[in-house]
Image (cartoon, rainbow, N blue to C red; front, side, top):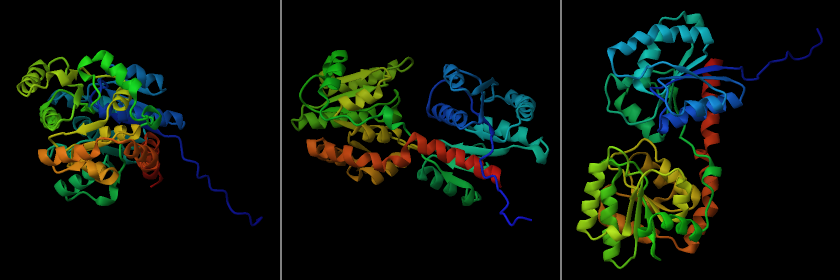
Length: 390
């Protein structure tokens, strides 16, 4: 005996993590899946994603992750025929963690796990990405050994609607952004505004530019934005409104409805309804104020984080994840839902002045650390290791 302390290897073990989701086309769930796969590979782990495939598969594989094509998200009883194949995959790749990100894949994944020996069964993690209608079907997302909630709003929703859920297994891990992709922009950013105006001449002028990004659905509150624009212009403010993302295939009737609403208030010359854009950070920089007017509470308010990171104030209906973020980060932008008078007052107050933009740009980087991509990735990988360490 030398009296030396025994060596304890506390190096995190290499993991194989299998993420389950319906497809890899587009959306927040898909984005988070790719971000965690990339973080796993970067940390020396093995990342496997099971889905029906889609346009994001090349991006996933370029990160060093693996994709296994399996349709586990199609709403059909036949989907449960994939249970055996999924169980065989878990065994063949030596999965340590199975992470389900959507309801039907979670059901298929849980059934696959049940048929495996306890000694070799992977641990089961779920992420509640949205505020789905409470039901036995949705309850599967609360049955992970760890349940990741993308906001405190989601955590409270789970505990309220599924009271048998053990709070100790819930982990609130907000979705994150890469600050490098949304750098602070000076205000006004005349170059960014000029580039936008070159594409959409209706946005020209010296007045403020309001931005409401979002797909073409009534839930995004486009009509509320039009009414706000009308009220501002009636007050003598030469405001303009840009709604990128509203014009897309299959939404022609909805866009026509918005155009009729705009015409009825003589707003057509101050409005641009456009397809989605890739350079959303430039859109934030070109704008003076960003709107988040979802009519239905959302699980998280990514637009709020992105815009504040660029240094632009945000006004939005204070419910769901959007209200949670605004109350924490910019209380003046948190407006009682659907109170148009309160929205008008808040926007008039928030329309930037040099000092107010400088204040946002100076204080936000530190306050947004919790909502960085790195923080989200690190907390998720720590949750995996915590579960394995048990």
